[in-house]
Image (tube, rainbow, N blue to C red; front, top):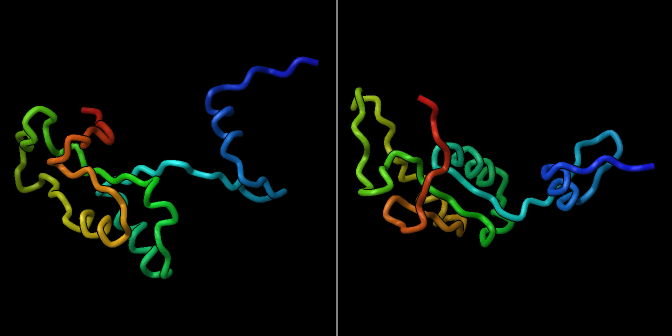
Amino acid sequence: MTTAPKTLFEKVWQQHIVVEPAGEPTLLYIDLQLLHEVTSPQAFEGLRLAGRKVRRPDRSIATVDTKRANNNRRPPPHPRPDRRPRRSPRCAKNCADFGVELYDVDSREQGIVHRHRP
């Protein structure tokens, strides 16, 4: 009997399984965590409230949003300046408090986290 070849997703998934309890979700080991300034405050707040730390800050990297152009780091023009999102200083504080490396706007390593479709 021949088994079907596995997709890349299936191969990566299999390599990261910690345990697969019957009738429960699979527990995976995440070996690199990418954090984003807009969506990470809730997670950091949850850790604070639970009295927890980031388990592997050495395997976590945070970056700011794509509000800056890659060539000159200036914010792109916005049709409604009053609605332009502002960089949250909370991200820098959270990263400092939890020992997570932050690629801030002025960092050489800072890059694109995601892209919005027009």
